Length: 278
Image (tube, rainbow, N blue to C red; front, side, top):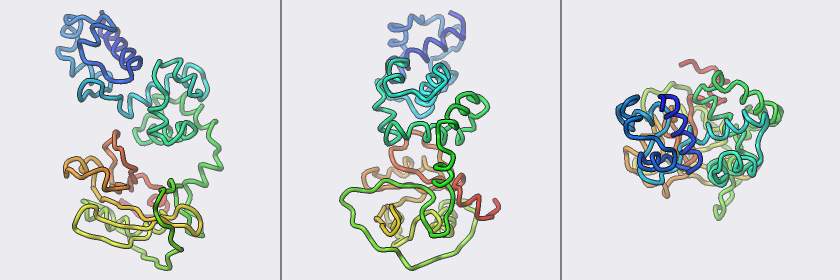
């Protein structure tokens, strides 16, 4: 096999299995021999790196990048946004994984667009970007991202079942600062919290850092538990429990597999529109 054939075999095998295979699995399902791998790459880890994949054990699901590539390749082939059945037919993978990650099949194009922009993949997937932008209603996207005068949130969060509703808070807190560490993230979040649809009700030294009210609908608010991190992956370093937190607010989002919702201040629309210079 050539070097490119090894890469192609691994990507196709991962797409069919729905997870990054071990090397014995790659040998079994794709016919890649040990000498092919060693001749061109030296180690299996280097093969994974060349494919943009990461393996953390048998059956570990594809990360955000692998899922994006699989979906984007179907868009490129069909030249349109695929239905869930079309996605499954072309990738031989279950669409429920994307549904779980994106909150519904209708949300997949928007989430993939956000990932493409976050990872600066627009040039590489220019044709896919064009299809996605034509599919998404520009007016609806503008409404979702733009700060509106009545204080509605910049994004439309999910309603959390079983949580009480609150009336509209009557407090404002104008602040502005660029973060250089976790404390800077807290300070910057405080300066734009209201524009993003949050009002802080409690800060503490214990985990999680913050309790806040979040606007779900006009005149309807719910409580969320927030952990502040300079980088989202620090949540793992600090060994926090996912089940005790609703949301990570960070400056840089570098944890693609994060099971929690993440607000990345660096790319938040309200930060860019506020005139704050970093």
